[in-house]
Image (cartoon, rainbow, N blue to C red; front, side):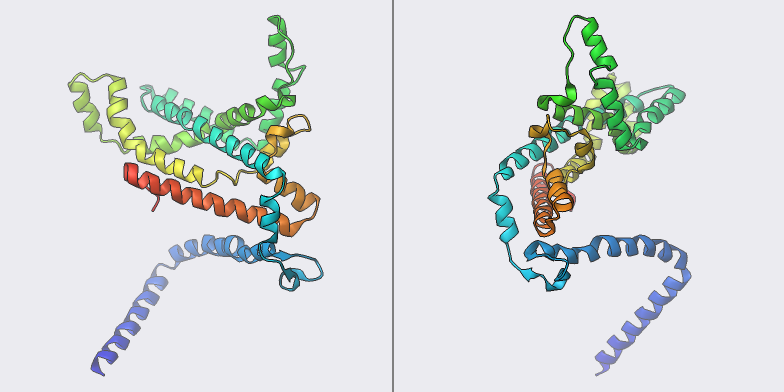
Length: 314
């Protein structure tokens, strides 16, 4: 009995301490409360709508009154003739984007880090960071103007005796245009993460290596890269978690009837059948399939990374 009283008193005391702490630091808790509220309202509450994937949704029946059909829509998608093409296009574009996007920001970060003139270092960082703030619509617009049949690129090709190329009309060019324009837009932003990681490198290691006669390339290879390698791996794991959930905005802007064979991915297919064809249950099922597969892939890559390099997200 005495032990129960002690436990109850300890619980009451902890509650009082927590209340005092909240009242004392209410500004900090308020700052945390707002993003937490946003997360609950816009990320967790909408999860209730995922049950549409298991129903034949109608406006009359609503979210709870529509008939339950189980895995019907998932089976329809997996057995559809578009499934294999969509998966090949999505995985091909995703892995191309991941593999090609690793080295450019890393090289840029190392180059900026070893720049001796501070003014040039800050200018280069600002110039490469600026494209990140350009909207996707504007980026695609610039790309279309540069690569149009009457644009400067085709003008140079024609002046050298070549034939004009319809870059946006050739399916083979779509993935490369998508990836390279994405690297140009996000390279400076991604480099900031690596620059921050490089700032944590112990300068005494560089001084000792310089005294021992190590060149810049040797210092990069044996000091900088091992230090930022965990950051690179974490970013790769996170990228693998989005392998099927690529945004449809840029693809839709670059897509046309001539490059549809390589540009049609799962996200654009969901957009067409969900908003255009109003097949809400079917599109929700495909979206849920994307999320589940991406999550499983991220877990698998995380586990492999943990065993191979002892670096993981959790």
